[in-house]
Image 1 (cartoon, rainbow, N blue to C red):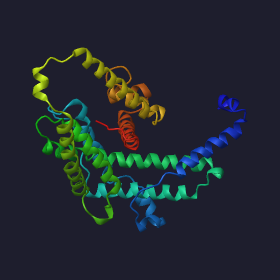
Image 2 (image 1 turned 60 degrees about the vertical axis):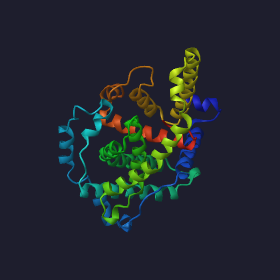
Image 3 (image 1 turned 90 degrees about the horizontal axis):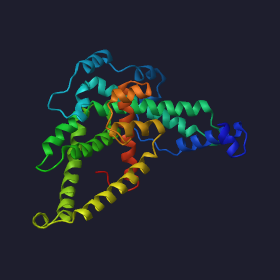
Image 4 (image 1 turned 120 degrees about the horizontal axis):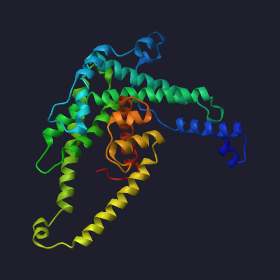
Length: 310
């Protein structure tokens, strides 16, 4: 802070006020999409809404006892750790997540950037963290649903990881849009959303391949210029690296490093959740949450910048 203040020739107190005002403007400008319920404005309901998830101890015990099947790829093994939520648990987590969004919305509406108190900014960030925790739990407990749908749609020559990635985007959107107050099971809603997305994306991907991947027989029968091919591959890799690094700059420092370590972008092999947790001094579960959130943020920025995430 002293270095920043000297750089702008301002006292530290003035520099802090400017930083807080910028933080407040960032929060005020972010719309909150959530499902409102009249119970959110009932003070008597707050304690119940914010209570621990029903059956949390049993849920934690199931998580610790679950082990992935031998045929599950290593990078998908963590999906087997997450038990399915009961209807009661599911309703509780969706209600809690939307209530926290409601609180965040009200706080943001009351914020005046030039007059924002530090305590208000801290509260905004705490609410965002709590919302992300709820969202991550709901996503993780339903990712096997994505796996199931992806396997059903898998065709010869297709990569299941691509389908799972596509399906996960639908799952994330479904978590945000699901109206828990109607009493329906989330799996029913999410399955419909994933299938609807596959119905659009798979034919589009097929048309893309048919349009741009042609002349297979001619390619096999002729001798390719390997040097030209290597230059093209190298150029494509350099371009991809530039885009990835550009997207990573949108993340905070710790999230950026977690994503790099987990994905092998740090110039070394992919690291396990436990290894990354040991590096940062946090649990592997926290590492997983940070990584999931980071990937989601990268996907959102990629969409904003019209970058095709393969």
